[in-house]
Amino acid sequence: MLYDIIIVGGGPAGLTAAIYARRNGRNVLLLEKEGFGGQIAYAPRVENYPGVGPVSGAELAENMLTQVMVLDTDTDIGTVCSVRQENGCWQVATEEGDVFQGRAVILAAGAAHRRLGLPGEDTLLGSGVSYCAVCDGGFYAGRTAAVVGGGDSALQEALLLSDICEKVYVIHRRAAFRGDAIKQQRLFSRKNVTVIAPAVIDGLIEKDGSLAALRLRDTETGRTRELETDVLFVSIGLKPELGCFENVLPLTPAGYADLDEGCAAAIPGIFAAGDCRKKTVRQLTTAVADGAAAALAACDYLDTLD
Ligand SMILES: Cc1cc2nc3c(=O)[nH]c(=O)nc-3n(C[C@H](O)[C@H](O)[C@H](O)COP(=O)(O)OP(=O)(O)OC[C@H]3O[C@@H](n4cnc5c(N)ncnc54)[C@H](O)[C@@H]3O)c2cc1C
Image 1 (cartoon, rainbow, N blue to C red):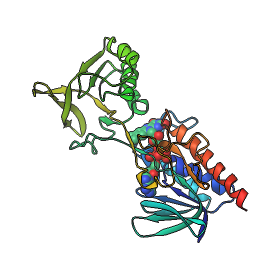
Image 2 (cartoon, rainbow, N blue to C red):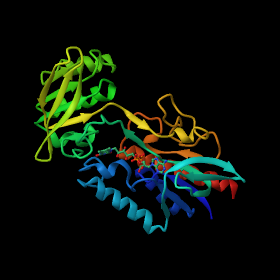
Image 3 (tube, rainbow, N blue to C red):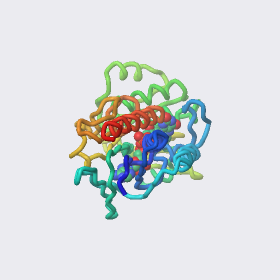
């Protein structure tokens, strides 16, 4: 079967693209490698999506998927590993060995937060480990928070948390921070902020199923100690996974799709949407905006072929 549009990634951007494309009468295949809903399915509570909530990320994702399924969208599970042009259409291949054919492709593969790789990091997600202070900071108002990271986003998250938390620790593996100097000045002058650097987190200490403390190691002296905290925000960067689409997408040095808000690549028929695209704010609202823009641009492109 030849699809009008194949969407790679079933997160908020891909699900929104599917809704817009189906409502435009296009036949659509939505491919997802893990579980539909993307990153938001892991959010314990979403409070900043206009008109909805508070709601669990899993429920929000389920509602989005239902909206897609009601429109009779074809879906499949598979990890897309290549997109290439052959016989006048796009061949979208998965690691599992399937090849699907489409006239246009929307890449909505998201970006994953880099993890520390510590034992317990996955199980404590939502119980004291978070990757998004904008999303989860409010749950720790008046309590103690720690942020690990030395770039702009870590500084920004710590600033946000210092407005609402009683105490904020900022942990960085180097003595010097990489982030913006003005942000550093603002942050480090706050009375409820303590910088711990150079130090790394060697372990997460759990009590009754929640994070209780961090095991820290001073990288200069090698000395270790425990630091009590209610939450750890891991802000050590995002990692897009677009490497196998380099042949069709221009990528920034950091690996994001280097496309503007129109979401269209220079190669006709290729679009990218959501967190995988170069942008300053990566949130639900910006992901669904991209999904809509990419789908409508793909529909316009198909109109020129019909
Ligand atoms: C714990 C957590 C809490 C958050 N809370 C909030 C919040 O409260 N409010 C808010 O606005 N934002 C929040 N965010 C951010 C928000 O979830 C993201 O901005 C949004 O999900 C981005 O949507 P996306 O579709 O672009 O990417 P993603 O959600 O990353 O979805 C991309 C999808 O593509 C799939 N995929 C990737 N590669 C392939 C491939 N090769 N083949 C097939 N499928 C592939 C992935 O499995 C994934 O399902 C949170 C993020 C996290 C991690």
